[in-house]
Image 1 (cartoon, rainbow, N blue to C red):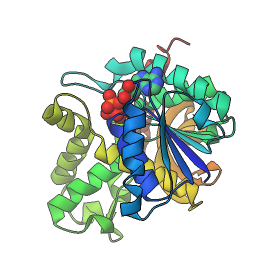
Image 2 (image 1 turned 30 degrees about the vertical axis):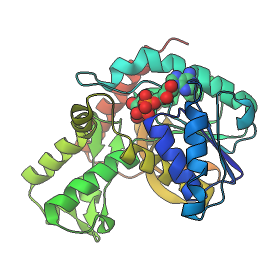
Image 3 (image 1 turned 180 degrees about the horizontal axis):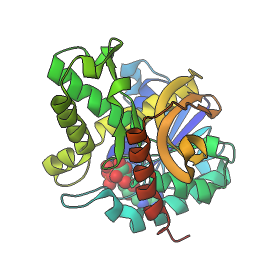
Length: 308
Ligand code: APR
């Protein structure tokens, strides 16, 4: 890729920008924030780490969108994070305004970009970016499923004492509370999870995954998770930048897939140079479909509250 822009130079944005630069996923990385000096300082600091990484992508920090012009991909992390006692939906009104305005400014300079949204509440903010950009749905995706899967994989690894590399996890649905994990499609070296642990253990790990965000918020107190969210975002970006055709769970606008229409929900998609290249549909059991429908209904209820 020629240029990747990261909007929001806070915890998630700065961590993601650094990974993008160190992995040389673009010829240039641009970091944007409204705070004066922060993106410039963090950007220069990252640029100065590039000789150590042996990576040649310069990092530019700025308060203006001029430098973002003609970006191939834009990662949206602008917005406020959660504090203890807050749900993701509590961020809705503030972050909807922010995501709407940064999307409009960014796409005006980069009409061909692919957008990846990280700001919460994730599924709804992805919808906001989709509407504000006017882009086709295959170019606007939200990052949640990769993070939820990574959390689940970590907890399975802790439980069984096996490498995280050999664990795959399959999650559908909205981010967090209404996440729909599919244990029968979650495996350790190809062995389905229900063959390796009892239902009570699976339920415990699923619950910890659902509450994974709040577990970190309660430790940090001043903000929310960012290492794993940034790494998960960069995995999506890498799949696109390298046209890898990876199958990853991402939040996208459904148009009838899984029997859901007009709601942004997490589903497995094929990610390549064009963005979302395919939605992978699998047959769900009645219980799984009911859980997905409930998750989609929760997202829709919040989507309907967005004021454009
Ligand atoms: N334009 C550009 N940047 C903005 C704007 C805006 N209109 N409004 C806010 N920001 C910036 C803030 O100045 C801040 O630097 O967004 C950044 C957010 O950084 P943090 O407060 O550190 O939050 P972070 O942990 O990175 O989370 C960002 O991602 O995971 C989600 O729930 C999380 O919605 C939150 C978002």
